[in-house]
Length: 384
Image (cartoon, rainbow, N blue to C red; front, side, top):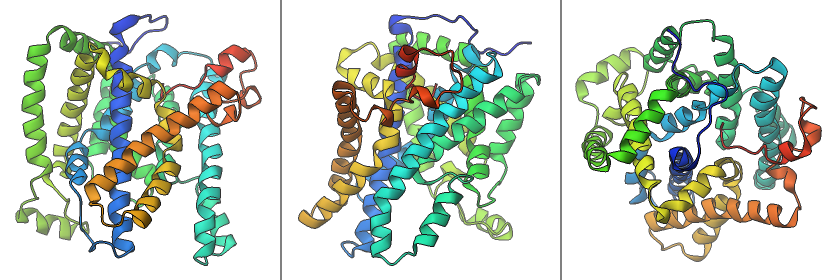
């Protein structure tokens, strides 16, 4: 039985795939929200503005989104893989590895240049900074880990095409359930996320059918979303029963922060949460008022690459000039700045033509030299 991936030559237009961009926009907002909120709370405590462990009202939203935030991001990333997975190795490697490697290395250099000033002022030796940079070549760094992980998943999926999709999916599910905590971000996050990426690829056709159903049956879809929201909320805001303490102590691991992080439960909530986001975004795609999500989805990699700078700058400005602002409101302002800042930077490069290499892979960085300059300029895609 063949998998249910999209096939080469797949064509769809108009509203039928608008929801994909909406879903990308939805996910990137929640990813940036997590970094913005947790960063504000951590650094407020470090600066002595709050007690350690103090959280703001935005933390409730971040906690609620924890089960589905990254699973849906990875699932959407795998959706269109079936269209291109059969290409020649040169073209596939160029589009799915070199493409992301270029942006990872470029923005790694930018992040290190941006942060090195602070590290040097804190007395961190240049040799240590250089060592950290070299380590980032083999171990994903900071907020860029998603960009690093995608090429790994693209290559592994290509290598597994001869194995029945159900076997791979089952194995990936077992990886997610298994207590894999090696300390390596690359290994641990791959084990935790690959099942969603592969499901997006292998089950793309039913996922598109689900989105079409939600779009045509808004009432029923909203009913599902309501039930899901309650169930997701119950698990994310419930502490783990004490009876699990002994099990985790024996395994030498910390007790999860909430029920949603327990094995099997996390896989179940990640799956139904990803389904919920598909349904929600299919519904939202009917309304022009949510068009900003589509724009963000079309440029999600722009936001992902560049949000760290406005996030850090806005956070420090607010701490300095508005130290009495509550953590939740501070986090919200930082979130807005972190999303809007990269969009402004991207539009500046697009309109002026300056610094276009920040968001578009230049022709010299292509292995597949058959690509035209026009295709090269259009190559900036959000996790596709």
